[in-house]
Image 1 (cartoon, rainbow, N blue to C red):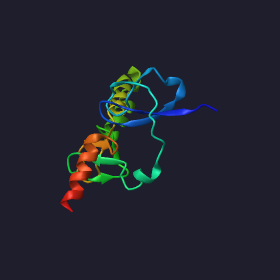
Image 2 (image 1 turned 180 degrees about the vertical axis):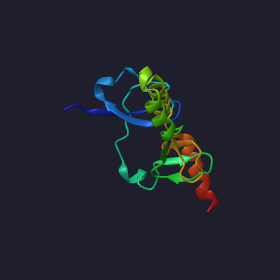
Image 3 (image 1 turned 90 degrees about the vertical axis):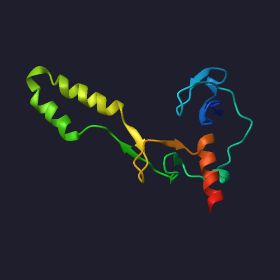
Image 4 (image 1 turned 60 degrees about the horizontal axis):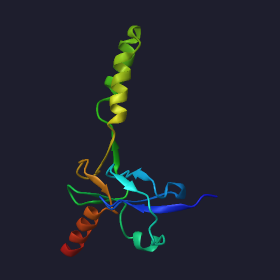
Length: 136
């Protein structure tokens, strides 16, 4: 059974769990896409401190979000029309449109519909949450 280590991104503060075999190697942060050297943190996992923190925070409206919406650009109806209307020429327009739609998916805030949703572990999200608590 392989062990895992927790790696914290120096750029955005995002913490991820990776297999121990990546220790000492450079990996890509899923949050900010920067390169990070995988080195184990000395902190043990603590679920009690994260239970009161939401999973995502919207930087536009400051909402705490447990499940952001997935937003795919374009129209499914246009996609179907492009697939059906261009059958004689190998559906190339349909393929291109489908690939464009699938590669541009975003997580959006269900309240303000902006795509500025970030994980709550990042320093910016922590700052937004602290500001909200001081306003209350």
